[in-house]
Amino acid sequence: MLNEKLLANARFVAAIAVILAISPTQGSAQTRLDRLESLSEEFTAVVYEKMVEELAPDPTEREAIAAAMPDAAWDDDFREAGGCILEAYETASSAEAVDQMLSDMEDALPRLADASMQEMEELGFFLPAGLSENDSLRINQECGMMELQRQRMMQSGFMEAMMDAARDG
Image 1: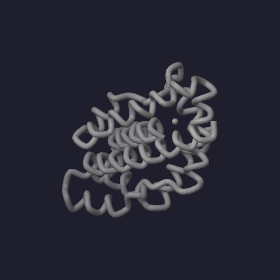
Image 2: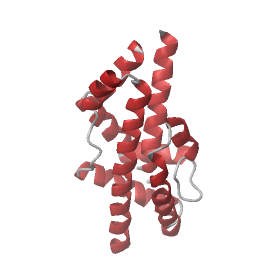
Image 3: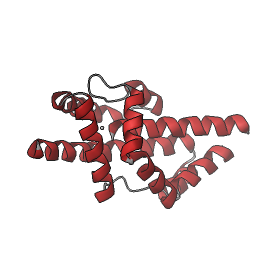
């Protein structure tokens, strides 16, 4: 039972890391933010679906968990956090490196639909040159993205449904 909870928690943390990894002048900044928003919404939706598939192989269980899946769409709070992340990434790296990260994410997106959670994790973090995974996690935490994701999953009941499935599975 304890091992199952640890495995479920590890999968949850890995999934959040995947979500957050995808979540990094006025006109260019707005374009980058729009790109990040769109990519983050698409990546997040795919990751949520993969989490449900892996936690609940039975279609009936899968349906119950999927019903609690939160909306991946960004609101103003997510946009503010995303803007903070992009600004921090550019400061720590460069605008060109952030653009390359977004292009890499756009290139990887079509491959996600057929990927398992394991394969998604193997894709690694999408980061601008010069930033580490720890840098990204710190920036995401400081900008509030991790808390926004956590709140959304708690409010929708998705986190509880995943934990229940892991415990029962």
